[in-house]
Image 1 (cartoon, rainbow, N blue to C red):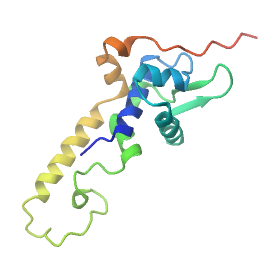
Image 2 (cartoon, helix red, strand yellow; image 1 turned 180 degrees about the vertical axis):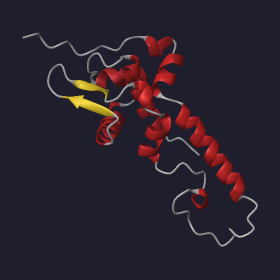
Image 3 (cartoon, rainbow, N blue to C red; image 1 turned 120 degrees about the vertical axis):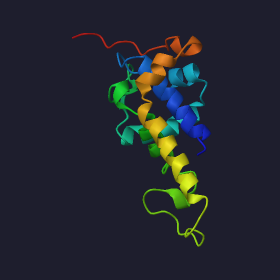
Image 4 (cartoon, rainbow, N blue to C red; image 1 turned 90 degrees about the vertical axis):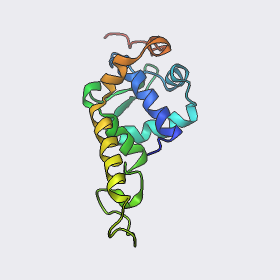
Length: 153
């Protein structure tokens, strides 16, 4: 399985949001600066993640993005599937609707591809945004410029 640059950028943004603990929304430009990610990519992936229920957006001068669930409840497997689809290394090894293959009967490779798929899924399922946030060091732990809090009242 190959992780696309787009998926890498999206997961960077999600880890940055996990590190912020959802206290206040984070502006897209601040996420981009914190994660060395092009704003144009975040403008594409954050709405996709919002539609999938991973993040929520808040409008207005103090708006931005924040996680929609606790970081420990969001697995990397869920995020990668949203952004990339099936996790099989080859189309004939997907769990649902595998691509037809004339070589499938007696195939020496199919079992190995299925093992690769299953190992990949297992790693991604057990890795949550909380896990990744806890591993973060250096630049990752530098707070982003947060949107100002709305005045009380």
